[in-house]
Image (tube, rainbow, N blue to C red; front, side, top):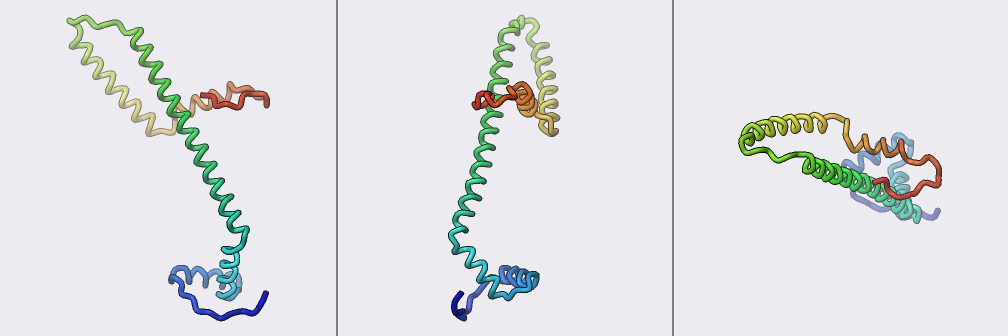
Length: 150
């Protein structure tokens, strides 16, 4: 290495405590801990490690966003299919039966909300069911299309 230069540095008390703990654990001097940390900070590898770590984080975020997009697409398509089906099969209610129909509608809606709350409170999700179903039905060979399932 070269000649060592004596200097005075000021550290936050919590950081200094960590330096002292590491020095005691490794049987190093506090100076050697600080020197190793600074050498690592200034090395070319440090920038590459930071870039690799950032890249891994961005990849993970990208996968999470892809899953969110897939879940949202599934939700919107499911709702659209349900509304279309409901509009096709639901006959108009005669005017003399509208009051009891509204009461029955409120009752069914309350049951729906309770079921939704139970479903959201548990780990069982429709998106997971559909994802597993897609994985099971996907071709097993390497010639399968690489596009998204939904």
